[in-house]
Length: 110
Image 1 (cartoon, one colour):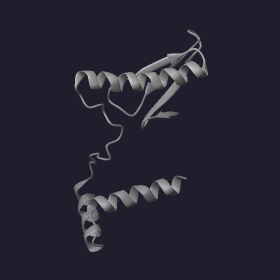
Image 2 (cartoon, one colour):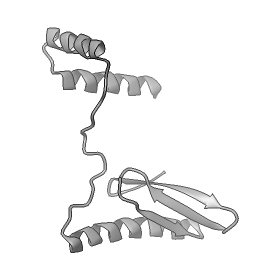
Image 3 (tube, one colour):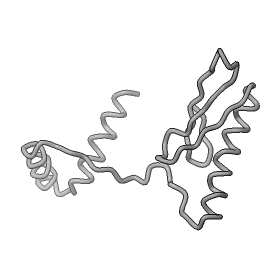
């Protein structure tokens, strides 16, 4: 995986076309890049992101920021009630509880 200015890209090799093709994976906007060598694909990756940011400036729109830190989650009502009560008893917000639970799960995976 490649990273530049907070954007992440993945690369695949197309054996038939003999070219590397990449996609930025952490935006809803479609940003792609390609190259025939590692150096070309790395340069194309950065150029595509810079071009996207420049295009947004020209159009007067805000570039989509990778991962704003906000997301919606759907839970069964009973689980929602249980975690809300659990968090309240511990005098923390529901958001803090969810953040800690996710961080703990990620820590277990590493």
